[in-house]
Length: 123
Image 1 (cartoon, rainbow, N blue to C red):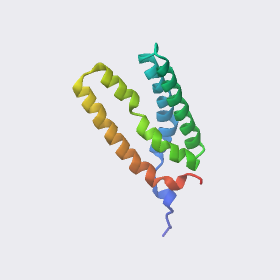
Image 2: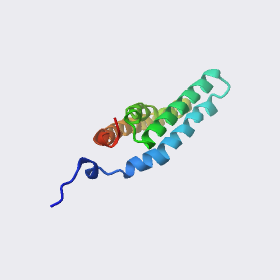
Image 3: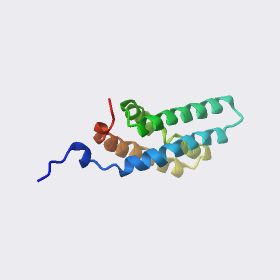
């Protein structure tokens, strides 16, 4: 009977998708805010800071650094912001409701997933 380690028990398919697809899309979606409010200097600043932050998280997660795992908690919380900004800007209440509901589910599910994979990141 083989002894399983903690690392082999945790699947990493979502982690691969998250790092190679989701985080780059988050970088691009940060500029969605700029596209919506491009005439305001604060939009340029906010989009640049979000893109910089998501880029830092991407680098840390790619190299499996512990600081990348720590910054990822912020990325999990910040990634629904462009969708929330869009739905609030449209003013459609049902869209706002579903976006907020999705954001809550997103944060909860990813917090469970990444907490279980803490051991995959170097301290």
